[in-house]
Length: 401
Ligand code: FES
Ligand code: FES
Image 1: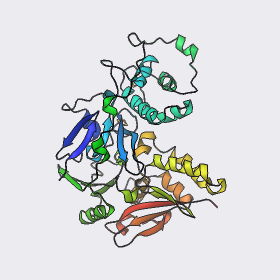
Image 2 (image 1 turned 60 degrees about the vertical axis):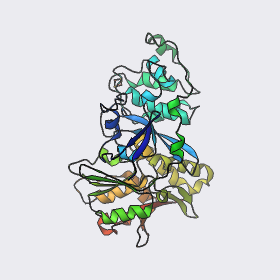
Image 3 (image 1 turned 120 degrees about the vertical axis):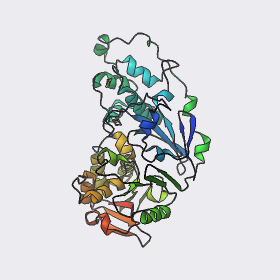
Image 4 (image 1 turned 135 degrees about the vertical axis):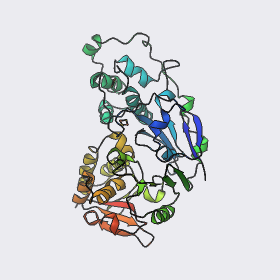
């Protein structure tokens, strides 16, 4: 069986049998690895202290995708073929600070520092993809962060100082002095550790199976493989979980919900991508909520206004779901399927994504080797009424009329 392969701050790592339950944050902070710059606080995707940058090669766009993620939600096994960058990988006071680290400190945005690496890594990732942001874009980034001691104003002021429309608040600055020792901003070129390795550009997913402590982790390379594994390892029982962003562990935890068969479907190309037809847009079920937001924006900008009223409403609503880091990895299909999987339990999932999709007349296609079936969202049965190999493949969102 292939090893788990990834890069961390430029260092190549291979692990023979990763424990399927080890989370990235715990691995980073372990005695063996010692990257304790990344903090663990809520462990539920709610505070942003554990934010790191995840980079993956996108073979279709032929570019590296860089995303800010919560390492407290992320299974270590799921980062196969990816590169992870933590605050230690972008700069330090021992060497040179990255400009984001510097500004946070210089604007007095850090006291105990527990939240700081998370703010830094989110902003750092954003700037790599948006080198000329405006203040509002920066302000919109931080709905997934909590600072318990500094107060948000100086943090935001430091971050907004990167905006092209930033005007320094002079009154504020005469009352707040930069900390001694960091008067000079140290601009850096790209760190060597931030170069995406060629090895990962040609990395092809292959069927992986790792076991540990009674849990099994499967990483199929195709939808057909995923369906076969699901059908033969418990089908739609609550012992089987399909994993994309794994954000559900922020809500549903052991011992109440403790599936032992985990099937990673995040990289399956059959579940990814967007396409339009005469009636609307097809959304791959494993696409993240953030990707849906971006795609809807493109359609809103290019299609006639009357057709995209529903898209405008849905996009606005999506931006209120959870927070940026959760939207960056949580999938639209996972959100919808969780409502059905939890519907008959003591802890139903109150998804407002599902509610808006239903209001807009969306439908969902469930893939099975027996044949695909498309249901209006409101008529999607509970998993116990679907074939054992059923996997949500696409969601269709119609144009307004
Ligand atoms: Fe709070 Fe991860 S520790 S979001
Ligand atoms: Fe202490 Fe933010 S600096 S929690």
